[in-house]
Length: 121
Image (cartoon, rainbow, N blue to C red; front, side, top):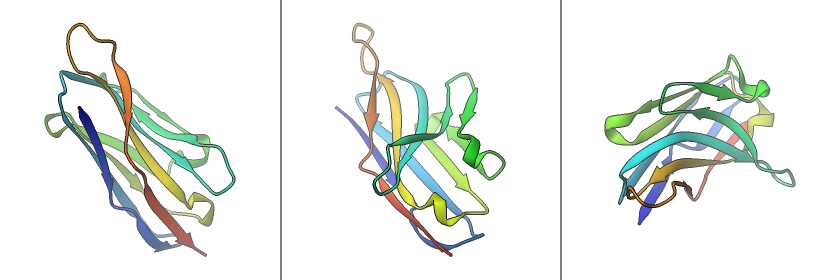
């Protein structure tokens, strides 16, 4: 059993900052990719940022230069620092972790329940 729990969402004014955290715990052998998706009302879920175990990052074009993803492997935790927030960043942010639980099982993605980020203009 693997649990993924996000924290750090909330209400912020446009131009402000928030830092999201996401911790994975449970029966974890290895964690590969960790990252963040978001889903705004009536829109499809989209990738915000991803960080591989080797340190490679991918960002959505809309957040490049404003958001920074990082991780603490010792804590199985990934962070998303969000600066210069815009109203269009308002969404539920979901964290995922690509986890292998044993040497013999296929690794798979585990998801958190989501955390609301609301940016007021």
